[in-house]
Image (cartoon, rainbow, N blue to C red):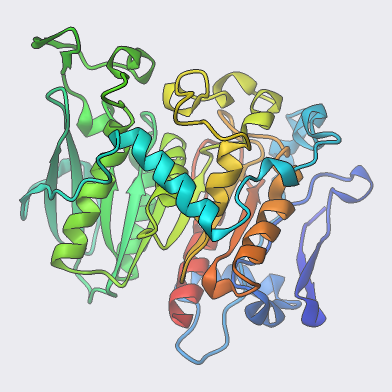
Length: 430
């Protein structure tokens, strides 16, 4: 059955038709992040939505907003998998989500942000340093991209003789004054990154591209914590515990490159907004960093996290439990809330002038954070953000896109069309 979004009247609520009703296949529970004012423009336009996404920019200033793209469930993928990909897991049954969201005020956000920052940088605060910059470099990983005027290489020195490399891509077309950060995951192929970066460049975004620590162009040796004179081979993330001490957190390997390169962007070309997109481990990084740093305006974490109470309940729970940096057992001082840390971070990433987050999870993902357990928390998180934003989307918005169009671990063409739609309509209204 094809799933369509329908908005009705001034209430701007959506009825999602499809498999939720009577167990006839699971619906893609997608809700507009454009807020009540835009939702009334979306009525009855499912057919036009895909065409609007393929056409690029959503609107001009003062014009009618394009409809949000919608797409049917991939029935071939659904037929290969069992009912656990269509129904809520037992772990979600009877769970009261509201108490698991510990953020109830703006003061709570500030307190949690201070605590997270304190843990990562051990009381020193977010670094104010700048990277070293090489302009006009050759970067073979991005050779297939078109519309690139220049690529700069940013180097961020970290502890234990580790250096993070970030690529800053300048579009050939007129810059739209906005910066997009794309963060790849744990060794995912570059095809998704290149497709996403290309779409952003085509819209005039300047793009910074990041790799996870010790992956892709960040593979390198690291100083032995017991003997700094000795260099050890490139570690996996599960081998990082010896570097995590009371005086130093290995989380800086993941998060400090973002802070330092954003410092550089603000000090030099001063973007009007900062958008962040990440896949898998990069989706986790997007979730955490957007919660940590309010300079990130809109964020789109893809296949990157589930709240802790749902982790073991995903159809493929073993990879969904997460890598070292994603687990409570590894970092009890960082994941220290009485509430669910990830639910809190979703809220923290969404509140502030012009801020918003759209979490994207692949229902049939071959790797991680799959299934439909997220339906248990989608409405409570969205409503908490709306409450803290006083019902004004320009002060904060959150939603979740359940992508059932494929069975890969990727940012699908449909998900990318929704991200671009959100950026186009949001920036057109800014």
